[in-house]
Structure formats: structure tokens, C-alpha cells
Length: 368
Length: 252
Ligand SMILES: Nc1ncnc2c1ncn2[C@@H]1O[C@H](COP(=O)(O)OP(=O)(O)OP(=O)(O)O)[C@@H](O)[C@H]1O
Ligand SMILES: [Mg+2]
Image 1 (tube, rainbow over the protein chains, first blue to last red):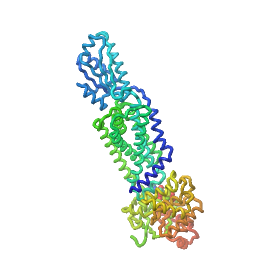
Image 2: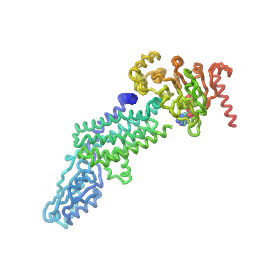
Image 3: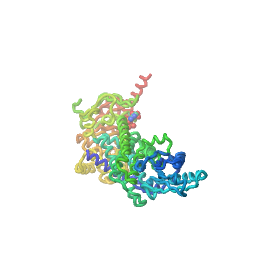
Image 4: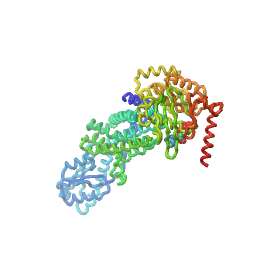
């Protein structure tokens, strides 16, 4: 059995090493994408989930909160009693920012020329980070001027302290997500192509007449791409560390373990595609539509999921990259523990198993 | 069902939807025989081979290869046969030698067994010069020889060749058939499909297939006598046009 698997893996490596297109996908593409996406993209963001801690409970603090509530840029998710709750929710990504109104805020506004509130921003995500700071600043400035007549004009200063990503580097946020896109590409796209190529050229038939079992064919075809995608992931992170100095903060062993769950999902999708596609062309198109595009567009890689329309947001539930995005950003930028990302890990296992089951059923029915 | 036959088919049938590609064919092939499976395009030759080799499940009838049932014992059959498919089964981005090593590997051969098998084959098939060339870059005749080498290096008892000489010049075809004779002399049973009628003359026995049915079966010389024709080509044309007339009549 190992002889047979070894023979197929060896052959697969020849294919990879001798095909410039495959080599380009594996090595040139990540470099290009890291450089391309490494520069932050600016976008209009709405409904940023935020939290409030109101230590003051005054008419003034309520007026300020109401203004935030009325704005379409913010969506108040949480009124917390204390700092711990807010911190936890920031870490989970439930909210992207929190505004803390200190005790005595209302009194202060009446008596002092300058009042302060505190803004906490999840800076691991510079797009949101910048947006939150800008929108909140604008809103607060507006709030001060509106109250000019009833109160004395009191400018409110923000003492903002960025969490997690203090210098707001776009690359820090984008590149971990890129790992997800590249892994999806290598695993799903290349595996589905290599299997459908054997069908197209007719070599699959000869394999099926030989003593090799279908499961051995699949295992042997999948192994090189799993190894390659892990190498690719590591390669991207090291390259990005050198070029953009992205942090590698969390538990890298945990990251590797959870990456394998993501790879499992990607491979299942790749197998599902190859169970349906009879030619390389079809496999390539299907992989593009079913894996690469959703991984870029529907995963929160660039476009925030919470500002998508509800039906699309629902659709993102079956995009594995969405979960992996949270995992890899969480671990690398916030040093998240397993407990924080366990929901995502479970989602990946479930999704991968569902895809694999469908692929197996399809292979069985097609064999006849 | 045995009595020295290494391939047996009884009322073997394969339907694709409503279409019957192979219609209740019955035949047997003895050990060491060169059995020619003749028929026009679409007659059902490849479909029959695919049922015998376990790629397709029959929708009716039964069969055995090397004494094993083609439906229930496919795995045992696989160890005993070599198969050359009608489509090319070489990896074009691998050299001839790498292709051989790959097919040896999936048959579980050790590298020692493989290198001695390769040595033997290079000599026998006269292909020492092309071993380091990419399979995609060699002429068709050589590709076919390489495919054959891949199919026989693990010493199968039975060899299935699906149109092994399609599209090559008469000289290469002749050379190929010399090799087939050699193989059969060493005790290997050869089941070969073709639509070249001259090749049929080289076979020990032939069957002629038409629209999924076997319309005659026997030794080429005997068949020629029986139908009073000079060549197998004439026999073929006579039988096939007869069969067409019959189907037309029964349709009316
Ligand atoms: N998987 C399939 N689904 C539907 N029809 C099929 C399938 N495979 C073969 N057929 C049909 O069955 C018939 C017999 O095909 P087969 O390949 O056995 O012919 P053949 O004798 O090998 O012909 P050729 O000389 O062209 O190789 C053809 O009409 C073909 O279109
Ligand atoms: Mg055929």
C-alpha cells in the first residue's frame, strides 16, 4: 500500500515541478498577492458594532449615546457595566470599538471647557480602526456643535488608545487573511485540477484497473498539496514578516493545528469539485467560483461581513475562509487562545465533513 | 465455469439508459490464446473490455477473468491483468523510464524487480534509446510501445489491449504484433480489439462484433472458408451488411 502511495506521490511531484503554471500558483502568486494586498484598502464602512460603558448615567451621556445610536455608521451592540466585559467582546470580535464615558462627564461638560471620553478600538483591523476613529470624531464634533446653544460649547477630546495593532498597519490585517486565500487556492484548486486531469487524459482508467484503491489515489494526490499549502502558509508569513514586519504573536502551534482544519475543508471542496468536473477547464472554473472568489469576497478578507446585506451575510456561513480568517487574525494579531476561536474551529470541522460526505456520495454514484 | 479458459463471458450486457452498448455477448478465451475482438466504431468493444477489467459493472450476464468473478472479485482480477487503454495512458511530462517506474510502483513492484523488468523490456521492445525522453515528445509508435511496456512489466497472466495500434504506420503495427506473438508464446493470454482487418489474420481466434452483438466467432482461416471469402475484411463486410439487412427487415 505504501509503495503504491509513494509511487503516486512521486509522480505528482514530477507534475508539480515540471509545470510552470502550477509552480506559479504555488510560489509566484503568494509573493505577488502579499505585495499587492500589503497596502491597505480604504472603503466605506457602515454599522460598525460598538459597545458603551456609561459610568455617568447622566442626561449628557445619554444624549451622546443617542447620537451614536442614530448614526448609520455605528451599531450599538452592548451596554456594559465594566471594562472586563468590553475587553472580552473586543477580543471575540463581537464589537470593534468601545466608548467609555467616565463618571462626572455630565457635570464636567457644564463646568469645564474640555471633557474627555475614551475610545477603545480593535486596531488589529486598521480599516475599521481608522473608520471608527474618523466617524466617531466627526460624530462627536457634530454633537458638540449641536449642543452649542443649549450648553456652552464644550469640545470633547478623545483619548484613544489602540488595542492590538498600535500603529494601524494595513498589511497586518490583510496578510494573515491572504494565507487563507492562498491555502484555499493550492488545496482546492490544484487538487481538483490534478484529479480531473487524469480523468480527461484517460490515465484514471488505467489507475482504476491497477491494484490501487480509489482511496489510495485520493490520499496520494492530496498529500503533496497539503504539504505545499502548509509550506506556502509559512512562506507567506515569513515573507510578510520581512517585508511588512507583521507580528507573529500567538501560539503558532495552535495556528498550525487549526490551519489543518481549514486545509481539511479546502480539500473536501476540491474533491467535491473533481467528483463533478470531467475536464481540467471545468474544474478550474468551478474552483474559481466555489472557492477563490468567496474566500476573497465573502470571508471578511477585505469587505466586512457585518456591512453586507442579510442574505449575503447568511451565505458567508458556508465559506470556510470566513472562520479561518478570524482564527488566523485572532492568533497572530491578538494572541487569541483556543477558547476564543473554538466556535470557528468547530464550524470548520462541520463544514469540511459535510463537503466530504457529499463528495464521497458523488464519487460512489459516478463510479457506475 | 472454467475448463482451462482464462476469460469467460456469458450473456454479458451493458446498457447506458435505454441504449444497449453490449448486447448479451457470450465467448471464452483459452490460456495463451491471441483473441481478436473486431468491430466498427461504436460496436461495443471498449465497453466489453471495461466490464472484463472491472471499470464498468455489467447490467446483465456474468463473466470471469483468471478464474475470478468480474463483479465480485475485481480486486483479485486486477493483480493478474495488464491493460492498455484506447486513450493514451502515459504521463506526457514524465520520461519513458519514469512512466515505467510509476506503473511498476502502483503494482507494488520493488525497485529491484522494476529495474530488472525494465532492462528486459528495453531489450525486447528495442526502446533503450528513448528511455530518458519525455513521453509527450516521442512518436506515436513509440508511445504505444511504452504503454505496452507499462502494461506488461508486472508479468500479468492476461493482457487486455484496446486498439493498441490505432493510427500508426503498417511497419510499426507489424513490429507491435511481433511482440504480441512473443507474449502469447510465453503463455500470456492476449485479448486485443482492433478495427484493422489485416490484424485479424494474426489472431488465433477472432470475434466480430456489430451493434453490441457478436455475429461470428472462430479461427480466421476457418471463418474465411466457411463464408467463402478471401480475406477477413470480406467476411466482415459480408456479415455486417447481412446483419444490417436483417435488422432492417425485422424493423419493417
Ligand atoms: N459511458 C457511456 N455512456 C453512454 N454511452 C456510452 C458510454 N460508453 C460508451 N457508450 C456508447 O456505447 C457504444 C459502444 O461504445 P464502445 O466505446 O464500446 O465502442 P467501440 O467498439 O470501442 O468503438 P471504437 O472503435 O470507436 O472505440 C457507443 O455508441 C458509445 O457511444
Ligand atoms: Mg473503443
